[in-house]
Length: 413
Image (cartoon, rainbow, N blue to C red; front, side, top):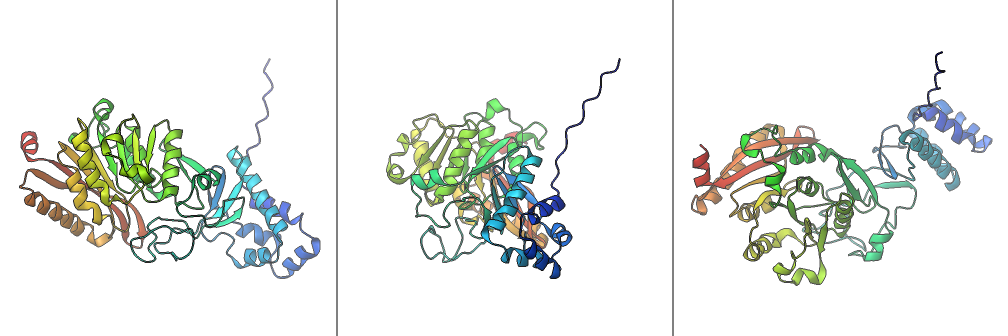
């Protein structure tokens, strides 16, 4: 006898028609009628309800332009706070069912501006007037939920960090955490993070890149623009220890929380601890050490650490600043010495037609530094990775510069 088939569980979908219908049923009938006379019908609202979003638990982030069409602008302007909150709660409820986990906050992504008004409380230091060196998401539009105050003390105190709203996501098997009110998250870097994660795998490409996890353990990576740990975590996942620099305390707190969630010990060096002798900074077994300071001191600190440590073999240096990280390139060259070999990953925005020209210029730059140092080391631009387009025919590029001792280069030929 055949067993009766179990009924299939209902599969929830994000249905704009149901969302709008449910919401309009909670609004006063005369107001709905007035909207209809203006052409803002239930069908029109459903068709223009934002449909593109990302979930960073427990937040839903709509794409730029959400609710910006004339129908929704008119309807929301005519709605009181209770009515708007009712709409957003229905949207969050619908997405929670789709995600099978509760989402509680709603916002619209408006991008990370290169320049901001730095006047007033809550803005950190910058190299030039108006430059958004902290990569703060100052244009994020919060719709529902407590995201924390729009501005906080600078630098933030521990209670500010503890009381902020934090979200997380998992990419390439690695958790990342940040406070969306105060810190950016670059979803578009996922392919570059994966590339760094797999850089030394057996099928990763060049023979000289292939290294086992055992060989990587005990080697070091340096990240000069750590952020919330984008590339830091890729190195840590492969067993390397990481020294990193970041000037934004909000980003460092995200890095710290993310590291702990991934199971890595982390030390944050800040305030008076920055003045301690370097041999006292690495007495623990932390896999990640992050300095809250300008990376202009990175070369000096690494040189001093080399005097104290039995071995500080740096295999990677990452310079992940856009539109260019060139201000740190010569320092990166210096800190790679006296490592047996090292890869520098240098980020820059480059016009599509100028990529090969820029590759040659970068190679010439490092060859000049090699000549100045007596040609004891050799540098070659091994690869140019096109990460993503950031404007028409303009690419976010990463130049992989491979550095090795000349004697070793000859032996491998």
